Length: 533
Image (cartoon, rainbow, N blue to C red; front, top):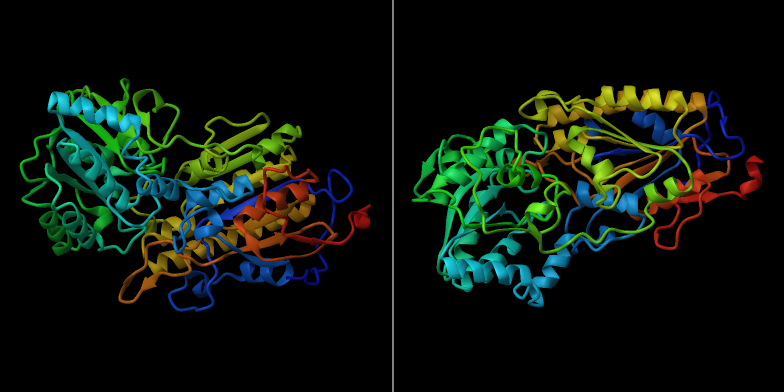
């Protein structure tokens, strides 16, 4: 889109002179997609005058944020991990889901030395393999076909497998877990030695905000088969939850059948490929100095295998099937190497995304990179506080802008995604209205100092809040917006592209050369660079 006429009160100043603004703010509205239909669309239904103002007065376009454009299979919706990795890398990376698919199809997973060694040990000792993961075809944290493949490989080799099934209901419809469990049981019906040991909603087993009281309930079911309900079958456990109006995400950790818990010498395999929601349950299982809650004892496992590498702190305690392939010359690295200062900020729910994922799986900050973690509110679900910590995040960003210490600020606002996942339209509308309020504050601060903002999203969510007769809680395949707020005078407009084009755009604004490793292209349509001279 071409650059609209600018409002008369916009002041063009640069604290560094010329056409290079300072700071450049990359603002990521998590879960904010583009959708023309206004029905059940929290963005369209919200009172958001500043969002309308921004789109009317600044150049904007659309970016593809799903499927092949972010390294996922055709038809696979984008997600926060993949979105932030692509935004930070400036290129399309082959994601874990298709990597694992390829290894299964080619037989490489079955031949993996780590898996072969574990199977040999368990066959010799007669102990059990505890396979855990999100039983869901959602493709965000796991993929059900991967779990089924692992079952066939391990149990097919003569090892008993006990499945600890985490139920989704966020990246899939809220009450779809019963069908997925039935499909799993049918797929594995002819595989001997397989049974479902526990069923748990991801609310408990896949927390990422140090809510250890939730994790403890899942842990006690997995390890001790204690402290939780017990059902005769997995289907009964889920069906009983539905009868009590409990959807998949919130199913209480439930022990199934005659499961008696883990024993010393057993092994654990975590099938999730996304890191952030696998860390806490594995920390409770593996960390020698764990302090989240009192464990009766730490199980002495013969092996623990992780699908991918979840954190540097956990690496000593497991073997990894698919090690991370960290991209080189990503945005944060290039900015650091140029001697510039950068700030990465988010509230708890998305902190890993603007740090670990945005930096290509790197835990430690680059030189010149600072980080701010703003605590997320302690509520059961975010429809109870749709504002989340957006205002507090904004307060910190404004301090950073006015302090003029940073060349680049990378910020995430979690509301659109986290409230969108609740499926509550009224709450999602309130979330959007909160974001509209803070965007107005950001624009005013940037105009005061001559800064610029690249405003975009990582994937869609809150623009689609209903699916037929039930709430829509998952991400979408919709494109996402990109708006260039208060760009340099040389900017004639911005054009449509992909998430991989955002990092080159930021480098363009910072006046830094794009490395050859980045295959994205700047989104900016520019006049000759001497226009501001």
